[in-house]
Length: 447
Image (tube, rainbow, N blue to C red):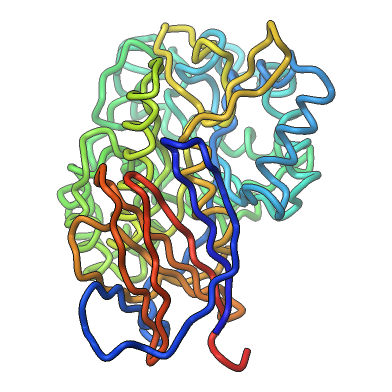
């Protein structure tokens, strides 16, 4: 069997170095093995992507034509990152230029005066440009807050709850938002009910109990979607950190009505690994998707911080996919060199950042970490069973729809480590530098 080995050594600044790999007959010893079992597959993978925020669109609009083309090709072409998923806020979020809503007052709501001028200025042009590169791009929409007048605290920021008397109106606003994007040829295939529904933030936020979130989803939003011919729209709940997944899921799916109306749970990484919760839910709720919908790292400087961020991405992605994750959506696709703009000063790093002074794009280590998955694992792939001799090596494998095997192996240790990749009676000997990662792709013998 032959295939490709794509390796990255971040300490030596060697990225996506491709060589040919050739499997040999297996050695008789059973040491240093990573074994893969392609006939034993687990969850289906929907794809990989990032988030279209107003900040990303604003920075994109400021770039030269050459940088715009480079950005779009690098993210969305099948020869590069091959992004197939995206997420965007319904109305404003912290990575917007300011608060804004589709409807700003009860009087405008009664008159049907909805405005999507901010979407048309900074979001829709970027998303349309991305879909020209990848027409199959599938998008998820997520609210950070309803309009302030619909909430108990009368503002978009600082938590508060959606008033019961506005459940129907808020569902209508969300559907009108979807219709606006559809008019521009943009394919939105899924929704989450609320970003981080138990977090009070200085920026746009809104609180729901699990009973409130599921009631809004199943009794108001789902019927509204069906009324407008959007029966296939997927609905996700939670959209928050992994540590709260099990309690939310158990309460949500105690009702059969909720089970029929909700397609999955979305989650973030900000409170740590909690891979066992994903694994448990994947076993207990095999018909529900578990989508990673947001993760980012702080805006820091220096090689040490970059290596920490490198580890965060690789460790979390490998752990999530091993545990049952069905797709990966990073946070901002693009920011400026300071990690913004952000109307609350809540700056962070993006995989790609634009240096306006030099009219150039800067690629952070997170870009390469994601690329070791997104460039080689196709939508429709399945996670394959794999086992490793050493807990200090991290690995996860996939089988693409055409039968191609993909294995990502990461060495988080500072020293070099070796292993033997084995499928059946064939093996390949791999040596990884400290903090290095490799993606191996190959077809079974005879294909």
